[in-house]
Image (cartoon, rainbow over the protein chains, first blue to last red):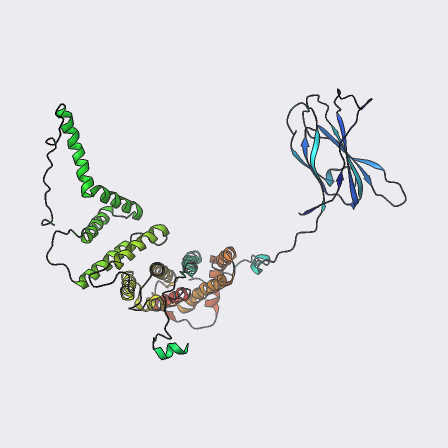
Length: 211
Length: 291
């Protein structure tokens, strides 16, 4: 399951307020984050880190056909991130949302709008961080398996064995131990050389000088 | 040993104390102190501690006999022997050293690798100790003799072990370094265990009435083992275990034995010696020769 990150541009949060924006007394309970894509992208997964957002709605503008203008469609409605907006639970969690959780088809997305809501007055600010959008990646590369793993011998009923054969499980256990001892010796060998310089067991000067 | 025992003169405890104000307390304190001191001076504390550590490491089945052998070896090694006649000749000394080295090597099973390596180190030092005429270090002749002795004591038939000795023996004049010594000892002990296993395998394969094994069955089993060893030549480490396991499982072995018996070849017996020789040949083929 591989995913490829889709390049996108996340615009700054915009607080929605009624009345004069400059009154900083009231803290807004609704924020909007816009995400634009440089190219039309298929959508697979959206991942982000929550920061004290209670409810999330996502609206998407799709590219339907060249003639009709693109419309805004709600694909996620009031998704609950914090079960109790006044308490900490779910406040700083990592969240992943998949395309099968969305209400509409997310094949060709032009723009994404996240609407964050936090009705509780306890928190000074709220947002979502580390927003990332993924699309379906290519399938994982095929690996080569050894023959006996990819083509296991079919579990056939063994033909009735000739009687008088020695017990196979005991024979097998002995043979496996013998194999293990041999493997151990093969693996442990010293590289120290004893320093032999002879030719076929002979240290004759004439022979040695020819090599 | 009676000639060696000498009684040390008892140390008078109270005479040397200048302060005679508390004579009673200081005398008992001095008495216990002198006992501890005495033990430490003689080196008994250290010796007993080393002996107990050795017992813990070797975990013998008969600790009393083990300790008796240990102290006997210690007594032989210490120079202050008490003058038991004239010093033993060179040949006897050599035999003693070989015996002691063998004793050290047998203390731990080769699978307890750290303990085994420690014992190999001690045995090497014991053999390399310089006699009056010999230069320090282990020479090839002693090493070869030690190998032969191990194989003989391990009850492995000569023909079975001969190819191994041929591969790992060193020439008389060569100086054997510790690594070569260690590898040689390990190979020897592992071969002895391998031959024991092959013997048990032969007993499983042999026909109880005839007391020999069918040649076809024996050859089939050996061929399967050879195939598994060759397969693990090429493969990487985890895969080769899996492959060997699948080849040497009871099902495949049963199939191989069954196929061998079904083939229309006349049955002929295979003796135990022949089976052991062939099995050992498979093992020895994987041993790297000294060079």
